[in-house]
Length: 139
Image 1: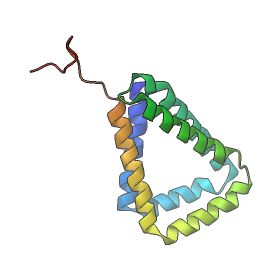
Image 2: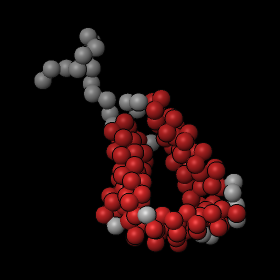
Image 3: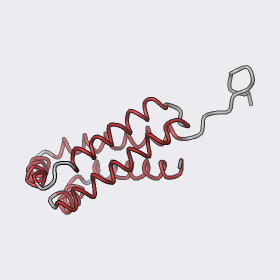
């Protein structure tokens, strides 16, 4: 399970880096899937699956409450998009047009994706080993 969550974290980091370097390429990619109902449902389903994955892996992470909360937010984000159906298509087009005109905001979103991916990668890595006294072993 941890490997899959790390893979998701690496994808988030890659999207963040790509969005900072070339936000227009991410906008073009998003335009191909966000304006169709099938694309909206697919992304909603993927987000719900990622959210459930984060919730499920939270108990063995460094910050279980935070990772669980992040998983709930991702699930809610996926469910809100999926429940919209066809009406979301016109809203998605308007959002994409607005974002294309404001590349600085796209870079802020990409920075958030980069930070979230880094946080998820950090929190699911193994905790440092502890000695019987509760302190990290001295090497």
